[in-house]
Image 1: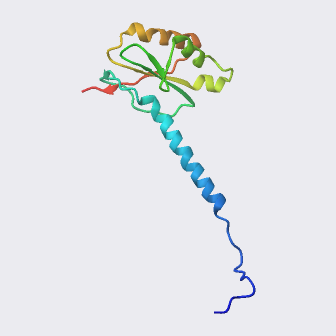
Image 2: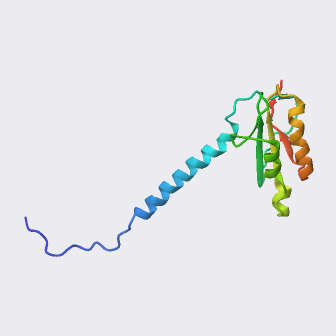
Length: 140
């Protein structure tokens, strides 16, 4: 067999390494993002039932989900917080658009008395937040 003396040139060649790197980075990004978005709903609580209400869920620019467990703990993103920590997170940022779009979602266990939820609502009123929604399950 004769060995060619010159390397053959086949024209333009594409280097696929950068594209493969980008694809793997996107996969990792979406895996982490999906894990973090699901972490706020991992605490097992029993939601209250509601006979009526709106199920429209437009995406807000900024949303904070607060879970109140049956033991009275407040969780934001899976982390235990105090009322003072909650007040710091909802304080106005100075950006009028994002401050108006802030929405608070309360996921309270149905066995939690109102006395535990009231301080959250008071802090929301102090911060001027009017978009407060309660997560419930549809009733019969």
